[in-house]
Length: 236
View 1 (cartoon, helix red, strand yellow):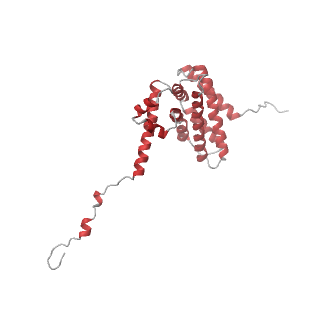
View 2 (cartoon, rainbow, N blue to C red):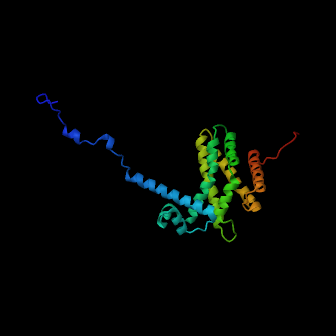
View 3 (cartoon, rainbow, N blue to C red):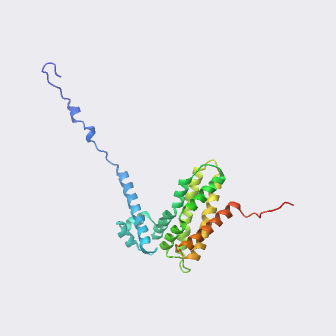
């Protein structure tokens, strides 16, 4: 108060200061661009998943993908090198459920527990369902077109690399090479039995084909667990 006049003094500088309650956070341009890029990439992959699930095959065009994702052709190629790259990434995401199951069941421990973690993730995954999706995505394998098989192999390689990294990070007490060898043995072994399963079933999903899958997976896990040394039933 002004003691002489009994009036309140008003501080001009304080009066002009912005009210904290009305100040809004302005997202930096770089954050907005990153968020937009992430949305576009997700839209492209979701569109690829939808096109594959609806009908069909790796044969969808760039124009079809751009229309479904509501982006331009140029945006697609800003994120992916080719349609094959889009399909490979979509297939890798589908197979990535193996990694999700591994993370859900992970428990620290010995090298044997590392094996059990990865084997358990394979058992917990509907691999036939995932492979059927990949089969539709690639339109099957044909002798005259190596591309589908190349994408199939790339899908398994990407998943194997990521799973090996996750396993090594969660078992720092173990040799990193052990993690890589273990995952490579199981995942590339899975790729081998998948090929046998596809030859026998053509990716059909029924009780008989699923029973065959479990038989092949049990055989793979047991073979890798026990190795190839001859058993000795007696001493002498």
